[in-house]
Image (cartoon, rainbow over all chains, first blue to last red; front, top):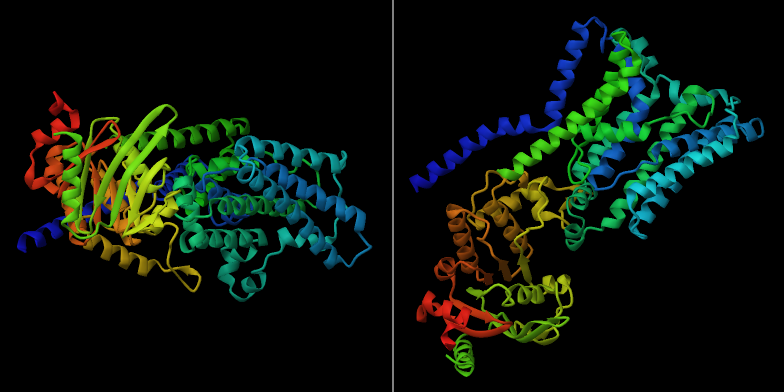
Length: 356
Length: 260
């Protein structure tokens, strides 16, 4: 009896010892440390206001549109898939909005027209997402090639519909989608919010917060979320255990497509113009961010918090390059090096775990 | 020992005891021109551990796969709890309370023990996962198997080979498996872990499960098994009661040296 009590105590001690180590092995914790160190270095390097009270709200509104996409993309990666078509989808949604406005401006009530263009934009995302999902699940097509193809088709359709024009005749109120500051009134009542510039945060930051919260809730608190992990870890095994893996994949692609469309809507609102090349490199930016945040390209691993921090890091590098006055041309070199390091680190950690 | 004697031996063993949970007899299976099984027989009762031994290619894995629904047999009878059944796929096998724990466990390495126990059958309350209840249940299952895991919230990737196997076994037991097919449960384990695994299998026996263990390790076989079924060239050449035999005899049956 005494011996077994001792054994339990030993196990507890061992557990406490490994708990700290395990915490430090969490990608989110590592990444957070990297972000803090990076911020301090950039500040020490001369950009004193980097992520300070003036910069931070601006930084958040710059990150927000990408954030809408990185969350469902991370969930798709965790489920063992990925989607290259998001840039094409976002641009298609931008162009369809511009085209609809140019055709219907003045013929409809403004509010109705705004609802209509948002619905058209989201529907484009839904359709491309559904095509991706059905192609991958029903036709067993390879996700890389499928979404490369739909990316080109969506981008081509965007360019084709635009026909070389970026239309500028938008309903004025459409700007509010990206520019409205919902806490403005609160800022007048509570001056400290104004001082910290929280009251100036525009709507997309709140869309992003909602998407982050929903992503976290679904992934960690619902059966569907656990099914995403199971599908990505072992698709056949999950299916044998009663997980509807095709449904997981289809919903994942549709969510990603609609998020990309929403990203396009925010950009169209911010620019009030609709060029077919509004977004560039969105797909690699969000996939890289999710991977830096610990999502495995092989599926089964990753988290919403990791994706958020990963995207922050991508944008922090961009901001720092500008604020430190470094040649912007080197930005991609740095991003590539960071991605390379993250992937190399994953491979190293995996090798180590395998040999243990 | 000739074939008739072996036949007597196995009939005699089975007639004296209660109805087996599972009987598989005259099972044959060929892959193209390769006859993997021609007349295989194995039976297991509740609260009994039967070892399935034989040389490489003797048909042990094929027989396990027939019982787990991974392969369909060409001929033969499978009788579960006195009823003749057909097993066409893994779900049929699962529904009959037969669970197979393979060497490559099909666990989700990035997920914790709780998630692995409940994959596909998660508990919810008001639409959201009931994580507390699942954790409590998982703790209960793990305690019941008397296996030591650091915590049920540990990702499986941090567990040792033996602990992973315990999780895989806990999963099938938790979902009501009464007949367990274990394929080389100690092959990948160190000495200490092997002993823990064998104790776990003995616990399962105490819980009245019927267990068929495929193993190459005769020391392990003799430590835990009640009976030993020997396959050679796809045929069951005999079923020995542990108390009546020794490893020399088993080896002779496995290799066919007794015929010389």
